Image 1 (cartoon, rainbow, N blue to C red):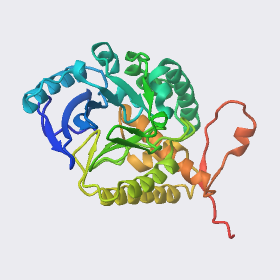
Image 2 (tube, helix red, strand yellow; image 1 turned 30 degrees about the vertical axis):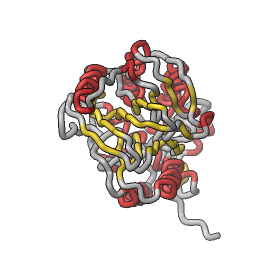
Image 3 (spheres, rainbow, N blue to C red; image 1 turned 180 degrees about the vertical axis):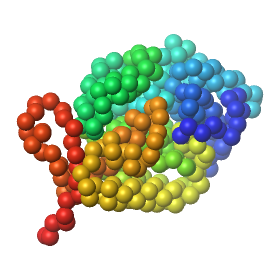
Length: 353
C-alpha cells in the first residue's frame, strides 16, 4: 500500500452511481511511505441531501492539507462549494489511524454526524486506553515471536510514534445501532483486517476500505492482539462479501486503483493466503519461531515493515495452530514460566479421524 497514486494531491477523479450519486476520489499522502484515498459522496435520498466523507486520512504531515485541497478542487469540478462545514456525515470504514486520524482536524471544523462500527468504536472514543493495551499485547507477542529485547523496544517505539498524535473524539452513531444503513448507504461488517471493518455500498458502487485492495493483500495480524481480527475472520469475511456484493461493477478501496472484477480479486487473495499457509507448513517441518518464519516468507524488510511482516506470519501460524496442524516444540519452557517466552512451532503429522 505504499505506492504513490497515479496523480498528485489536488487532482481528483469522479464516478457516478447508477442512481445518480456523485463520488469524488481525493488522494492523500497519509504517511511518508503511504498514500491513500478518501471519498466525498453527494447523493439525494428521500428528498434529503447527503454530503458524506468516507474516511478522513491520517491527520499526519500533509494529509489534512491534501484533504482541504481536494475539497477545493472537487468544488470546482462539481460547480458547488463543498467544504468540511458542508458535510452531513462522516463514515469511517475501520479503526486504523490512516482512515480516521484526520478527525482531530475535521471535528472542530464540521458539524457532520460521525459513524463507525461498534467493534471499532473505542478506537475513536477511548483511543489512549486502547493504544496502551495494544502496546502491552504487542510486546508479549514479540517476545513469543522470538524478537530480541533491543529490536522489540524499537518496534514498540515505531508502533507508537505516529499514534501519539491522535486524541479521542465523540462518535454520534454506530452502524449496528442504525441497522447497518444510513439513508442510501448500506454497510456490511467484514472483520479480519480490523475488528469493526465495514464495506459500504451505494447503489452499484462498493467502498471497500482496506478489506479488499486491487494489488495488495490487506495486512493480517493475530487475533490474540485484537479480538475479531485474524486470518480466520478475514477469510470468512471474503466469502460473506462475495455473496452480499453480487455482480457489483465498481469497488473503490482506501488505497490503490479501483477494482472492476471483485470476484476475481477475492479469488486471487484467497489463493495468496493458501499459498502462504502451505509455505509456513513446509518451513515448520523443523521447529521455528514466528520471527524466523517471517524472514522465510518475506525476506529482509526494514522499518515498520518488520512489524507488519511479523504480524502477518503470526496470523498464518495462529490460523494453522487453531486447526491442529502445528504444535509447540518447547512446551516445557512455557510450563516453567508465568511470563511470555519464545515459542517454537512445528508441523504436526496429520491425525487420522
